[in-house]
Length: 292
Image (cartoon, rainbow, N blue to C red; front, side, top):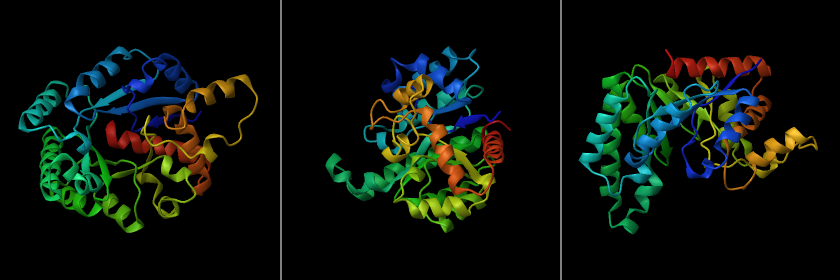
């Protein structure tokens, strides 16, 4: 039987709080047996860690990561990096990565709305990114990297650190050349909802050409909703299918880890491999990143 891992899901988000038991049951029913949950800021470190501990005995395993996302740096300083370092130190045996970290060009461009110059914002982002890469290297942990309009700025940092366990470029959207640059450094690329949009031909063509051993599945739920075309494709009237669909499409703006299966189904139409071969290799890729 095929098994699946969501390599990036913010399961601690308030969007899931009321329906979490039912959602996890449906994930298990769909053979989604592992969910990687990155933190985004010091405010949710404990939430992510406690979520994993609360569900420790479940057949579906939840694995936490600790990191600070570039979207949430505005009010943060050196003391928050110290807090992160102490949390990683304390929870080293519980977490599987440093993440979600990265650089975001759109945030930098709009920095003046928050009283910063773009240059100051970039410097602030880079300082946090550098610190967290160094933290990952110290603890021999992989990283989960957010990017937006920033491939050219991320790459020099990754080349400098040459992390032994590399990590995942989350929600990859870019050219084949950019993808190869990350792969050459040992990184896997997160394949998510982008491939469900027919307009994303550059990313789709890149995913089609890449070696299978560099890909992992992700949803980024509750963010990054799938295309409506894919969400509503091939729905039938059976009660079980309708129950799953209700959880995954309760709001067109809220994504769900259940949608990992729909992303996988789209991937099978892009890639030449048979479904079971594809699923098995994707799981081996997850093992290589987080569990070796």
